Image (cartoon, rainbow, N blue to C red; front, top):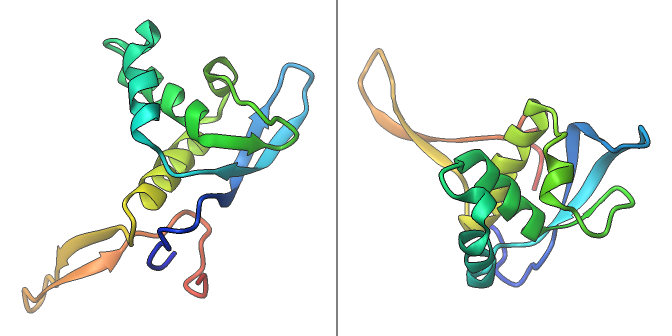
Length: 130
């Protein structure tokens, strides 16, 4: 993913495994929007997230995921059923679209000690992705 256009208000994604709902239906394709200050306020006010960083993540994701499969409203309780691979994917996807740019990791060549940045890529993302 290259530089994020600040005018884009939604981003499509596909979960590696998918959210399985109570009827057994798998939801993989979704849409996420960038987070707002209001989202942070909603998460801060929810008592379920106090002292539980992972649940805070589910609360925030439920605010910014606008669609997942046929679900147009995703509740934190539904996200409790995510596979850990999908939760990791959504965390990284959230971070990427809210950083307003590439996720770069500073690294160093072990042979010459030259420092450089490497772009962090989502699992399954090709280098041809715009």
